[in-house]
Length: 102
Image (cartoon, rainbow, N blue to C red; front, side):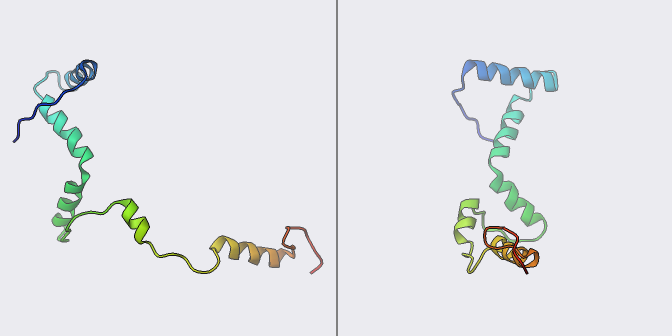
């Protein structure tokens, strides 16, 4: 355990204490509630320990930004364009979606 000091706005701290009191009936759980909030923000440790519980070695996590950056670039037409063209041919539409003689 580590003891820390933080500066929190008086009204925020008062509201937090009220919520803890309403939830537990006393203020003895203030520290555990603060820790719970901090754990919710620091998800990486929980992800790694979850992987370890199922026998997967995890060296860390990466952000969604890194995943998007490493995603391969698509080549060729998008599936939306391919489907539009297939429907156009099936329904005998020209490129402006006007019906034409098939």
